Amino acid sequence: MTRSILLALALAASGCAMKSGNLPAEEAPTTETETATTSTKTTRIADEPRVCAPSPGPSRREQVCWRWRCDGDASRPATWGGDGATCDAADLDADAADRALRRINVHRALADLSPVVLEDAWTPAAQECALIAHANAKLSHTPPEDWACWSPLGAATSELSLVANRSAPLSIAAYFEDPGNETTMVHRRWLLDEGLTTVGLGSTSKFSCVVVDGRALGGPKPAKAAAGRGWAAWPPAGPVPFDVFTEEKLDTAGWTIQSTSDELATADVTVTEDGEPRPITITRLGAGLGSRSAVRFVPNGWSTEAGHAYVVTAGAIQLTVEPVDCDVP
Image 1 (cartoon, one colour):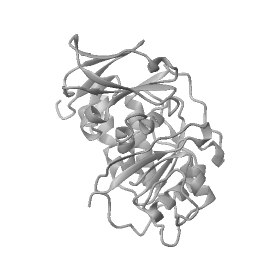
Image 2 (cartoon, rainbow, N blue to C red; image 1 turned 135 degrees about the horizontal axis):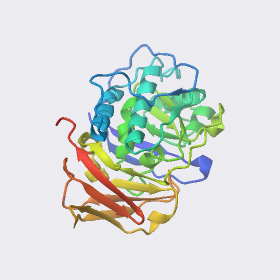
Image 3 (cartoon, rainbow, N blue to C red; image 1 turned 120 degrees about the vertical axis):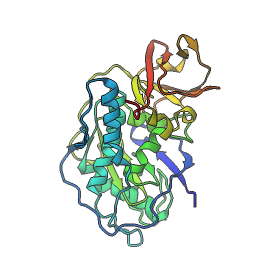
């Protein structure tokens, strides 16, 4: 049976509003596993991919393809030893958390952004968030007190998180696709936020929460991001595996550029190929949702092709997107 997924984010900590949306869900596991792995109680970083062969070649194209392929196992679902019927949040599957974090960071690496770290001090809160969603088979950033397994901690964390009806590894690509949120693209923008340094993860076998602002949850203060260039794009500049375009349906979900300034609120946006303009449909995105300003644009009457180069200009920002077929040497 086809199920729907709601990707919800509340920005209560920053006083910003949120819009959520629905999208077709991929087939999810229909049974829950009986065991879960206890997470390591330290702050961990998972920017580097696990060892795999062959080693990448020297070119940027080879390195990008290798990194994308080596992190492919990040899409396997999480296991969970909890129980929604008894309101047992259990422990986070540490392997699944690592794979979800790697999945976030491979996207950030392609976008030339610093990796984020996983804050284990936020895990219990994120698990309570995921438990509420799992026990009710519903998603909300403001779950009411009459929901099964409601708790003050879980409800508060729902306001600080991206929430999905997929386990943590499976949800990441959906956040970047972000269908149903065409006027905000808020989930993609948060995960590509230049200032994001730390996330929290919680997951059952079918639902997950990614904490993007856990300052109210305790633990070490998140590191301050180094000053960057002030913008991020998806798809990003340079070689990009063509699988990104197909798996995340970018030609329909939309390309985005986000900025730490207000420059994209009125900037002219163009896409050219070999000097020829390519028609696009432009949407100015809601301000303050993961970035100060942002714009979404969708190819109009054409499709992205591997081996081509697309020059994108948005005001003073310019980048060249180069889709590559990683199956072709």
